[in-house]
Image (cartoon, rainbow, N blue to C red; front, side, top):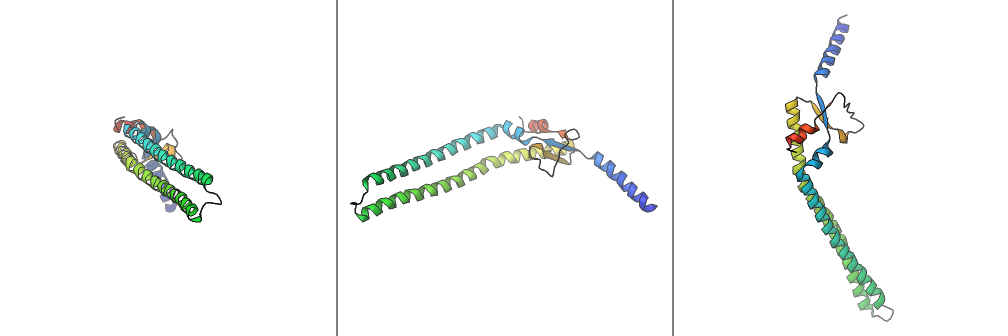
Length: 169
């Protein structure tokens, strides 16, 4: 009898505890896209990406031009040392192109991280502040919910507007 009473009491206590907990959700994409810092960072990243792309396209054109020139100028009568030198020039250009591609990708990724990290930090601070002020146990990003998480939006408060207000947007 006491075992049943303890189990019943535990279930009742759990039900009251679960009911008292506050959960919230927000839309990260809505928040981040409204931030002026994000817009500025995105514009800077796009400009840098375009510059990298332009540089790589110019290098490709140079390789193509050299290769076409090689095909028209080099024939069976061309001395071996000249043919090898021209082939080496083209291979060196291709190697420089590959190196530039890798370096640009790495530099772009580092720049992206440098630009976005402060923005992510601001949003995290705002979410933490809203959670503390509102007494929420969990605030989930409804845009990133995975199969392990389900947000019942009828029982969870959407605090996207509060987070945007906290960020001044």
